[in-house]
Image (cartoon, rainbow, N blue to C red; front, side):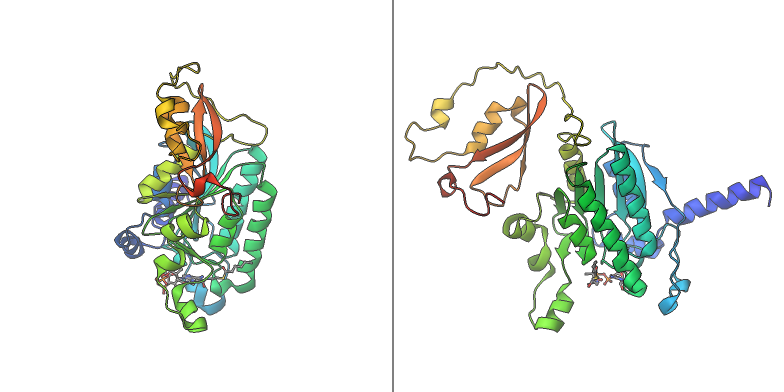
Length: 341
Ligand code: HXC
């Protein structure tokens, strides 16, 4: 084969890999109000900055007719990119390929970017849309999750790990996020559960909807598993970019300052009207936080959960700061086990 033929073949393989599970599956993904892995990555990172790894990797399974079902890149798109000019490593599970399920090759691709993120000291962002361990690959899939969970724990406290839930995620596809620092969910289209409503019905006889079992609202307000939710995928990915802007790349670096044009010695007017002199009267501490921080910008974490404490990120004199404030408007700001989690 000459060079031209080889280059043609490479180009054909690139086109095929970009199609994931094929046009019909992509249409089904869009019909569910979801985007493909590559569309999501394009929205998350700075334009043109994504560098893909292992785009042509395929699974090696021969059981259950799996040799008939091989896709270039398998069920995940992985690599690196820039967010506001700062490097991150990321992976996006591709639901169009066997429901984004995780087998040996998918796990190896994910572990490679996790290792690179740790070695280079960059945040790791996971876009999850997966039915969990690939049933056909059996114990190899489970071992793949063990490799991922191990890396989640090694990276904990060293680099920021963000998990974004963008589809029906079950099994290992939610255990790994559970070990990471922040979980973001898209309202209406993302779900997190150990196993889906069908299995729950079979095993316990209980009928429960996707939303009740593991929707964004349930995890943002009841379980506290979701730190942030977006109205849709685009807003959720925008929240990832906003959150990253407050975080250091790793435990040896400072968080990035950003000039805000808000003088640190600005005088705060109107506080006596906001904070009652009578300690028995409540007020909304979030309003106080907004007045204190630069330009009134406050990214509240766990907005719907344990509302008696207010936590989040803001800037002061251009430097990112974490905010922890008792909320007198809820339970008189008293601490309980949920607030201290
Ligand atoms: C292989 C899977 C899969 C999986 C989904 N698919 N999950 N294939 N392994 N785990 C396939 C489906 O067969 C289907 O293929 C396609 O992906 C799309 O799935 P649908 O069911 O049509 O989509 P939807 O109705 O949206 O439901 C999504 C779902 C459901 C809720 C995730 O598929 C589901 O409940 N899957 C099983 C989830 C589960 O119990 N996983 C636990 C894995 S155990 P076709 O070709 O039919 O369209 C685990 C343990 C880890 O992860 C432990 C680590 C130590």
